[in-house]
Length: 234
Image (cartoon, rainbow, N blue to C red; front, side, top):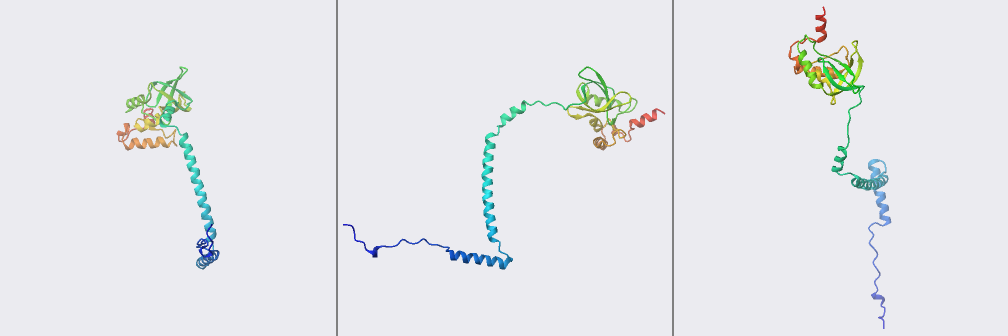
């Protein structure tokens, strides 16, 4: 037979302990609001709390997006060996010049002759510089310096003009180096300020050569070629 039911043995299930009842939450709400109002003159803690929650959610989503993106990048990034192989296959060429060729002759410290791909000869006067005359000190040294820089080499000419002697006037480049600038920096040519007054690179190169007494600047008062020509033509 089933056991007899005794109501004294029955225990009702305990109700869950509620820390915050609706009444307590209302009192807390009022207390926080009154406290903030008395301190700041306004009640903004509710709005601030909602903004904080919104910002936290946005940051969490942004973090998830970054992790996904990084995962994709890591999967698609080539290894270093593959990059090296790819770079090895790239061939670089010099920028296009109006005139290019091989230097066949060096006349002095500022004039060369080049032969282009059509076997035509061009006499080129280096723009913005002036080197010693043939009867002037350092003429031989200047010619040798320019020969070491360009003779027998492939050069590109940034053409500026044609002078009254029919020579092409331009800036000579060899292996990416500005030869006109190098000659001034080495101290074997002057910055020809009359024809290149705004060329700050040549001006600074001459300051450098003069400060370190390079080339002809080893003399205390070297004579500029234009002054030399004026004296000798009298």
